[in-house]
Length: 301
Image (cartoon, rainbow, N blue to C red; front, side, top):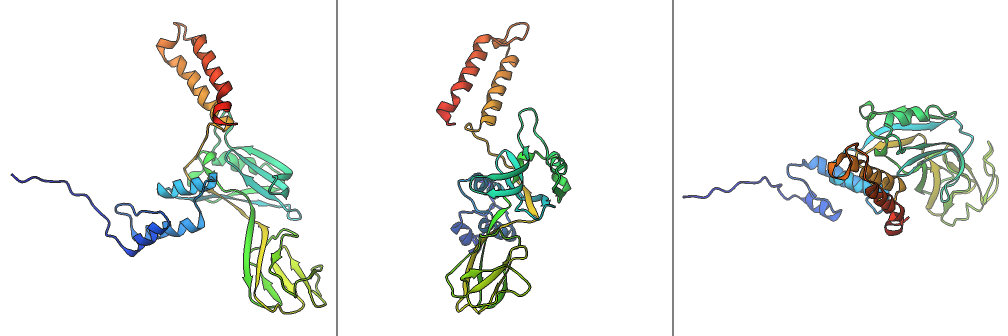
């Protein structure tokens, strides 16, 4: 009697699978080459890493979860260096962002993405933004407005740009809304003294000017070599993306509180741990509160 064995569908190994192996990706069974190609490209745009955003990028890509543009944020107060910073639990709107490293500046509004009493949706966050004096949120995908706001991802509107420019007296950088005094470039005799950006432009050797709003650099003399520019700028509009992945940690006070709140609620639902009036046993509640008190010591604060 012959024995029958179940067959499994296997991908045919192609050159693109070799490329995927270089970036740590494996093509799923039945996954189309075009989709796998886009996934490989995405590894260079949304890089994986140990940071919160890096983990979200990696997990979302491995699970095949689509990144969607949820909404954009603009600021009408263009005379200041406005900014937006989003971390794992808050969205901070700055009418003027002074220092990205220390996260200091004039805060117009802080929006809690994971409050204790409720979990707001993306629509709730958009409504909150639109109540401010200077900031406006514009919906880009109506299909995800009811999704939890904790699924929003993007770090900050403060971005770093890099350009390599051929020798010329006027050149436009890749981005606009540059931050004053943020322009760094390879040493060159054409860039010695920065002067005001007037209609007449630089007037002598070694002078240059910058239109920070439009991202244009002017020089009086031709640079002798190619110039490498590094600068910071404000992404305008600022793009807020949605990926259905959320990472929490016991070192997050909010996560710890929710965990122990759930433990406390479970006491009520277990007949063995409650009285006939459904009042939880004091010993168990005391133990939960004790665990909550010492959790930061063992899991980090």
